[in-house]
Structure formats: C-alpha cells, structure tokens
Amino acid sequence: MEEQTLRYLRGRFGDHYRRSELTPPPFAHEREWGYVPWTEGPGETYVRHKSLLDLGELSDFLARERPRHVYFSAGRYENPSATTMGGKNWRRSDLIFDLDADHLPSAEPDDSYGEMLAKCKDALLRLLDFLETDFAFDDLTVVFSGGRGYHVHVRDEGIQHLQRDARREIVDYVRGIGLDPGSLIRTEMRGNVTARVLPTDGGWGRRVHQRLLAFVDELEALDEADALARLQELDGIGKGRAETVYGAIKRNRAAIEEGNMEAGGVGIRTLVDSLVTEVVEAQNAPIDEPVSTDTNRLIRLPGSIHGGSGLAVKRIDRDAIDEFDPLADAVPETFRKHDIAVEVTDCGRVELDGDSFTLQEGELSVPESLGVFLMCRGRAEKGQE
Image (tube, rainbow, N blue to C red; front, top):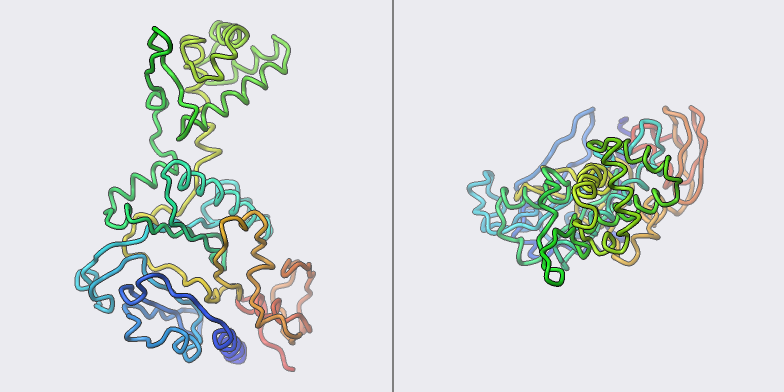
C-alpha cells in the first residue's frame, strides 16, 4: 500500500470514528484490547495486552489512533493488561462463534463476494437454530464481521465459566462431529409396548426425522421400481432390504411420522442410519472451531471498520438477519458523501452498496465507498484529486 493511500484511509477511518457512537461490550474494563495500526509495508503490527485504562476513553482512542482493526477479548480478567495469559488471572469468557467463508464446504473458487456472504448467512441461520433451539441460549449478539462472515457472541451466565473441553463439546455438537446414529434413538412406552423412537421435537433427532419424512415423500412420488432403485443407492440397503423398507413405508406412514422406528423394523433403522451422514453434512454449522474453544480469543469490535474491506463490523438485530445485506447495510455513512479518484490495479466486477461496477485498470473516479473498499482490499491506490 502506497503512503498516500495509507494516509487517506487512516484519515477517513478517523473521520468515521469521530462521527460514530460505539457501544463497548459488557464489562469492557475487564477485557483485553488489541488493535492493528496503519503501517507501511506488507506486514501488520498487532498491538495487544491493553486495557481500557491503557487506551483511555474508547471513542477518544479510536478518533486519535484511527486503527486499521480493533479487537476485544472474549475473556474477562482481573488484570487484562498483563503481558502473559497467566498474569491476567482469567475469570470467565463469552462463547464466540466465527463463521468465515474460508470454512464453508459450499463455497466455490469462482463465487463472488456477495455469493460467498449469502452462503455464510445460510450457515449463520443454521448455527442460530442450534444455539436458540437446541441449547436455549438467549443472550446472543449477532455481528457481521466486516469481512467474510459473521460472529455470534453468547453471554448466557451458564457458559461463562466453561473450560476448553466443555466448549469443545458444544463445538462438536453444532458441527455434528462423532454423531452416532444409535444415540439418536430413545426407548419409549407406546401404549403397552416398548418402542424405539426417533425424537421429533428437537436436537439432531428432529433434523434427521425431518429429512426422513422428506425422503419418504420423495419415494412416494416415484413408481415402485424407481423407489426401490432410489433406496438401493443408500449404504447398507440392498434389493431385499429395499423391498422391506418400501413395504414398511406403504403400511406405516403414520407411525413413521410419529418417529416410531419399530414400524419398519431393521429396514427403517438402516434407512435412518444412511440419512444421518447426509443430514450432518447439509445442516451442521461450519464454524471456525478454535475460536469457540479459546477462552482468551480476541474478536472484532462491533461498530469498528474492518481494515481489509472498509465495511463496518455491524451488529444485526435478530429479526433483521434475513433482510440484512452486508454489501449495502455495512457501508459506513462516512464513505457515502462523494466520489474520489483511485488508481485501479486489479480490474474486474465489484458489487457494492446496491450497485454493480465493472472496473478497468487505471485512474477512475468512483464513489468513495467503492474506492475505500478497493484500497482496503489491495485492488487500488489513492489517485490524484
């Protein structure tokens, strides 16, 4: 990044912070703070082990330092500015989830930035289903990271003192790691009979049961020969077992809807076993696992600007997630005022702030939001006005 570009971005980030009111996290004085200043050259300088006593009033610090990135810790400490983790004297930590497009199995190399973020939002909604429905967490903060995904901060009292191993169990659950199909089946009394039942009311059992019913619907839409062929595509189901399963479905659809695995005998249970892997692959939340197990993790400050995109790290109300468009709603108002000159070094198509741009190399006049985006991503330098 050229010196002129660096000075411009640092100055405009400062303008943003002087005009913005940022809300710090709860118990901000008990957290470690860190930031990345604007420096020349290809590398970055990471300043950490700071407390708010070191930085001063947060709004004053941001307006004065105009950092490229700003972070605070999930952990709360007795001495947050100690330079060793042992010296900080850990007290408790939020539980943080990070969804990044780099970890999405569905991401394709030729996805546009917008397509990548749309896939990440789908993963966010799956994650929230686990956190809200399966774990019944209710103190959640959802944040667009300003870059390639989303963060979720869980601050329920019940998770605050969990150590890494316990947090690992939560991670394994939302990722579906080690999920044993047999563990989903429970034994219940149905009338005077003991039955093996797939839960329909929650957890992975609910997800597998919903997929089972969708698969049954698929079979019933086919003629018998095609339905038997479809069943034999699944692991563990040959011709004879396919006929057994198909017959059980025809006779016992209502029982299957209730989750009764006895209705189709071994065949239905084999069908469920075959579907579990598919359900886990399709419905797990592909989080960045080390972030959630780390009680000392630093995470981006909502309201700050991501120095790699020029977009805001933005809190999102729970009922606004579906409609949230990160490439429009996270554009800082400070950068919407006028056009600027940039020297484009990496041409191509860019979508931003509700518009689409096809850029050629060379000097161009562009909306400032686009210019900041390009400069932050290393695709342009500041041009002469």
